[in-house]
Length: 545
Image (cartoon, rainbow, N blue to C red; front, side, top):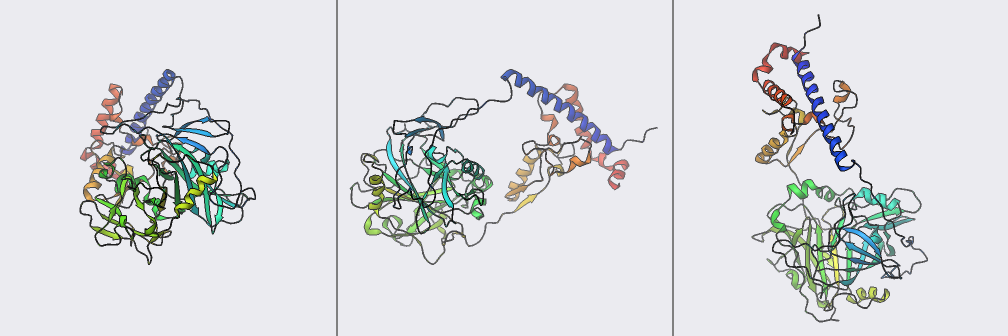
C-alpha cells in the first residue's frame, strides 16, 4: 500500500493543482486578447537625422574663447510639453525644429502640440522667444576625456529620460553635445533655442553630464543625481523673458548620499508634502525695467529631497532681496518642482558679489530650523556684459522678450557634504523600518504562504507604528524546473525581474474563475486558517522532520 500522505504534502498538492488551473485560465485570457488586438507585439520605428560632428577636447578646430560659437543645427524650437515628440528639418541653414509635447506610446502616432488647461488655470500666454542657454560646469578630466551633455534636446541626443543607463547607451552611440574646455577645469556650451515660456505645461529640458574617453580606456561615466537627470524649467512671461540664461552646474558624484535620497521612496513617500504643489509656478523676480543698467536675474536652485513635510527651504544673503543678513529676514524658496527648490531675485551691480546660505524653516511660522555650515558662504559674481558676448558671437539680435531688460544666471547647488563646502545637515537621515518576507505573512484571507494583498495590512500597521520603510525578500518568479523541485525555492534565482511569483496571488480575488474552483479555494482557505489545523499530531510531526 502507498505511504500515508502528510498534511504538508496534501496542502502542497492542492495548491499546485489550483495554481495550474489559474495559470491556464490567465494564459487563455492573454491569448484571446492578443487575437483581438492583432498580436502582443507592436512594431516601432526610429527616426535618425544627421547631426554635426562634435570636436574633441582642446581641438584646434575650436576657438579658445568663451562664449562658444554656434554650430550648425543648434537652433532649436521648444514648445510647452512634457518631452520632445518629433523633429522637423528647418530652413536651408540646417536648423532643427523641436516641438515639446508628450512622447507617443509604442504604436501610436506623435500627438499634435496641445495646450492643457487645469481647473483655475488661465489660458497660456502665446508667443515665442529666442534664448541662448550657456551651460557651464567644472570637471578635472584626464587626457582624452571630454564632457558631454545627453538630454531631451535634439542636439543632446533626443534622450527624453536621461537615466544613467540611457546616458551611457547614448554616449556609446555618439549622441550628445560635447562641451568645450575653457580654462581651469571649466567646460562650456552655448545653445540657441526658441521656446514658448508662457505655454502650459511650461517647456523644460532634461539632461545629464557624462564623461567620454576618446582613448577608450573606460566606458562613458555619467554623473549621479536623480534617476531622470537634471531638469531646467523655462517658464516665465513672454514679454520679459531674458535673452541669455547661464546655467552653472556642480558635477554630481555617483556615490553621493543625495543621489540615494532622490529615489522615489524618499521623494514620493517619506518626504512627500502635497501642500508644496499648490502654487502652480515659482514666483518670478521683479526687475526695475531699465535696460543697460547691469541688473540681472539670479535663480538659486537646490535639488534637496531631505525636507520634512511642513518644512520648506529658504535663503539668507547679502543683497536686499535676500534680507541683507538681517536677523529674521529669510526669503522662502518654491517647492513646486520638488525635490527641486527654486528662488528668483533681481540683483543690481552695486550689490555684487552676492553671498548667501540655504536654510530649512517651518512653512507656517518661518522659524529657521537649520542653517548651512561652513567657514564661508556661497559667492556669486556675474559680469552682465559678458553674458551679451554670446549674442554677439552667435550673431543673434532679436533674442529675449520685447520688454526684456536683463539676462539670467541659474545656480544649481548641491547639498551633499562631499561636494559642497557648506553642508546643510550635521547628521545623516535615519529611519526605522521592518524587514520581512512575503511568505512569512499570515492573514485570515491567506492560504498559508503570504500574499501580495497582505502587504496592504502590513503597510497600515507600519504607518501606525511610525515606521518609514518595509524591506522584502525577492518576490519574482523562480519556477524554472517544476513547482515541486526544491531548486526553485531559492528566492534569488529569478527567471525575470519583471515576473512576479504567482504563489503570492490571492486566488479568490481573481475575477472570472469557475464556480467549482472558487468554491474549492474558499474551502481550503477556511481549513488552512482553522486554529485546530496546526495542532494536529501529523502536522507537528512534519514540523519536527
